[in-house]
Image (cartoon, rainbow, N blue to C red; front, top):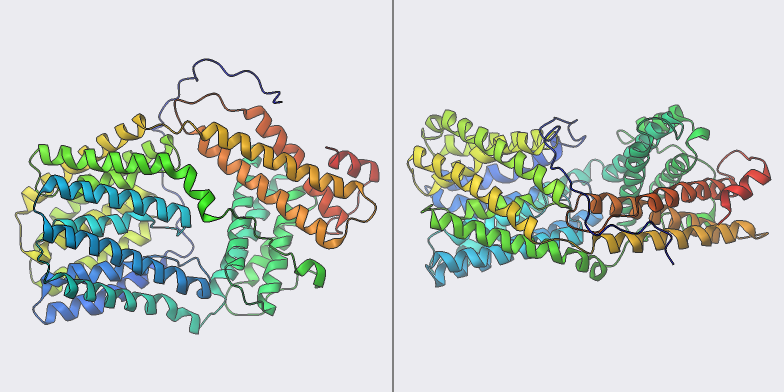
Length: 554
């Protein structure tokens, strides 16, 4: 039975934040990889088509080229498969859109098809954790294709062009493997070590320590996912796994961790030099390093049902509202709505504000560059390349800043099919952005995620069971190296899932009060048990046996 405080009849009111929504953060450490890759993927086919006098085909070429934005955090063996699926997903979305455009001229039907496509793309990208830019690029391309003049006879050729440029994007993204074959794994491990060092600096106490600990476990989980996505063992991978274990141990016992040493290890992972050895190899422990505790795909689809309904409803209503206002390109409102939906309502609100601000500023940027773009198709292609590069440079600092480049690039892409009136184009884009944001957010308010609290309860139960299992092993005389390592990894994963689930649920509206006190107590006891387990494994300095027993007590 739960001992949580009885929930009130109505949840407390929550305010939608404004402070900090537009604040700039630090750029991604690998911002240059997607930025350079997308330029390399777009430039050859776009310039070739322009030279051949076929600028109207550039849109279909860019559909495949934009796949170069994905999977830059994945090891190359895993990246090959992920990129292949992204290209197939892009091709499937474009195929459905082009066939629909060829079969019907009804804008209402096309908006409906676009909304259903957007919901499917959102769910699949979130469930498979494909990573940024997620569903937005796929939805943008498929939605734009819905309103491109099309006949059934043209569809095979346009799809062949998309497939060819998608294959070229795959080659561009895989090319760095020839120079630095373990680069992604090394970067993920370095990020985990740095995050653990930041938490170690707090000593596990003081202001901001909880946030630093959550960030540390998120980085460690990302490192494990990176390492486990490659099946072939190697000396480099084993050495990296042991470094991630050291980061995980530092998170369990920050007071005993050497932050300077963690940073030194992280710094040594740059380049292609040898990976530092973080301790002697142990065959029994190595077998269980990085036990994969990720939930299967089918288990991740269920919680995404409210998100799918929000996306489908919000995109459809945004498109219909745009049509009612007489906008000629309702897919802009549809894409705006699709871009809003995040893990919870609070994050969705923040994205809505960022989208509107970024798009309005981006429209002004378009006004400044459109005379240059009208100099010719080569100038138009070069402008698109510059904005695609700028978007990847800026978007990791804040979504609105990246939108300042994405918006003029999207507007310029319409120029390949002709030279529409810039004034009307800008007006339509601003109106569609506002309509999409308002209607999309209204749909998020209407479709609530009432199961968020139940997911927190399940995460609490899983964390309690994982802690109890580790504590039982610690109480025994000889738990065994493999069993203890498995229990420590399972508990670490359960605590990371608990924090992520609680944070996501905290941003939802219209739900029962969350058991915040139980979450905090479960985290505190779980991390004490993690520290005791690490000491029992010999990964930390020994303490008094009575203290260790107290730490591990259920």
